[in-house]
Length: 552
Image (cartoon, rainbow, N blue to C red; front, side, top):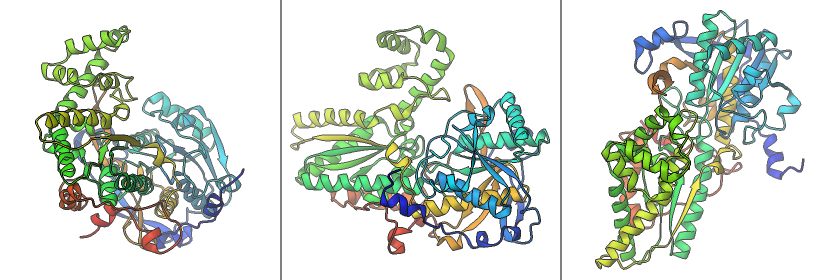
């Protein structure tokens, strides 16, 4: 391979570890805390998870563990969308396994969870792994979105593990993937299969977290990557002084990415979906706010600006959320008939006929291209594919119409030229930052220690992340404590509850305190590219979100 100089150098980076993980693995054991409870729906979830519900929080401590040296075979799965640092989770897991016993083996199931049920795998060796350390992507074994939820799949998983003498599986994924991990752990425990299951928290969206999972891996790198791009656009906007840039940022439900990028770059306007939902802000009100800002800046001879739009915004706008919910239910219930409608005109007419009056009005008021996007193929959960809805273009078109109205009334004399962007895939496979390289390696190494201590149904946890890596606290939490019941495809199912932006949290408060100033007065901030060498405050600083959350 023709490697870049950075790629060669990153292969040699040695991730920093919490002090406890620097010990001999035979001297790392666990200290159990009190029994845990799920977020809600406790009676129902206790019945669903009789073998793994209520387990205690585990903290790694320095005590003799005679089982750490046992020879074991472990399988690892990458599940869902990519996130920077996934390769280092596998590296940490591999190094932990080999530190326990050099004869132990790590198998990587290819293409995601489907690799487990199809027995499609490779043995991950030291030489093979060395080509992936500290690099972005999931290409070491590939990923996939197959859901493990049927008894047939679970039984097949047992067969494959027994065939390969695999006694533990590590699933690296987001909330749905770790929900699947919990269900797999429960089933294996109920069958006394002798197979442990451990999860690792992955998602750039940042919505898989709580007091024990302070950040999902990849969030740090992705937001720094997007912030560099936003800063570049801000510098260009302030140079050319003629464009309004509307930038949609990845984040299926929560606005953590948008909030962090706003704190990093100080744009003129940033929408936080959770605030929109809480205040029941309508689409018209959002458009009017942006139009008013454009007018104010034009009065200062600044016909330019930057607007950040969260990917999942449209579902949080009350009338749009109601419309999408009705569409999801309608198209799930009447899928067979709907699939017989061949033209958009026929589909649109049938949709309007079957929606409620308010939702029909909301649907009809949308531009034709947005209507078409709402009726595209569903995602694997049967829902509208929000990422394919060009919300940033919808806002541009509506703001433009509002400004034309204001201009005809003599209330606006500026010029509104615009550009639109969607930053998503650009950040999912970036070279991981030093933070994510360290954090992911620690998560993988911790996953091994949880296996070595006989645990199952746990998620690897590394806390105290705003401090240097040596001060991080490693352990594990039962996945069931993060769960609640939600309706999926018309049925009540256990899922990990998404962590949304908290409006009373320190990160949002810091943003809210400054946004009015950033709106009218150009206050752009330029984070620049991710740095790997130099002072700690340049190379090893965590996200602003983490720093603010830890200022207590």
